[in-house]
Length: 211
Image 1 (cartoon, rainbow, N blue to C red):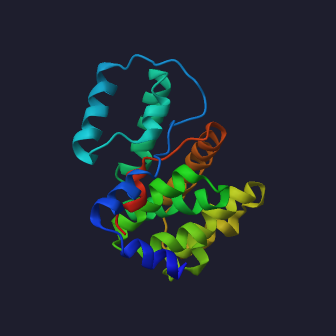
Image 2: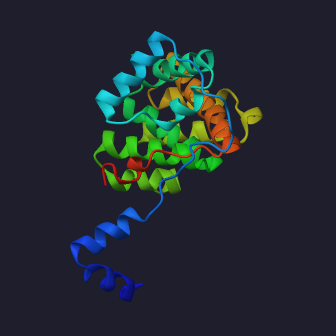
């Protein structure tokens, strides 16, 4: 390993650039061969907004674009859960996405939403900890209760009882917040399974964001 690092450092700039270019992107985006759909004006504008704001269109949207109705439903639910007003911060919502995706070992969502946790928190360490094991992260009481609930709901949903909801209330969550935690958890369990079933691949740019 040390020899490999030393060798890489000793390369000239053009050689390093060529080596980097040789690393393949995660293509194709999904393993299924689906016909290209026709986007509605609203979704065409949404794709352009992503391109303008992010500099790229998230591959999950491209994957859903074979069927405009499914794309619109997915985007509407995602935007409502993750971006609309809520008692949960955007960081907390992304933390749930990552903790759930870690249980399901979803490559796409761990990569994309791990990057979002790093960005919102300003902490690459926190993003990596939640990807690997949220219990290793130094979370406050509220965040730990939230992620423990999301993980239990993912792994053993039939075992959720009133004391689980009460633990969230004691941590400061209102009942509407509990609904949002449950809805985000449910959404990402669905999204994880679709991503895994189709071998959905994240945009390569996510890997280097907020490191």
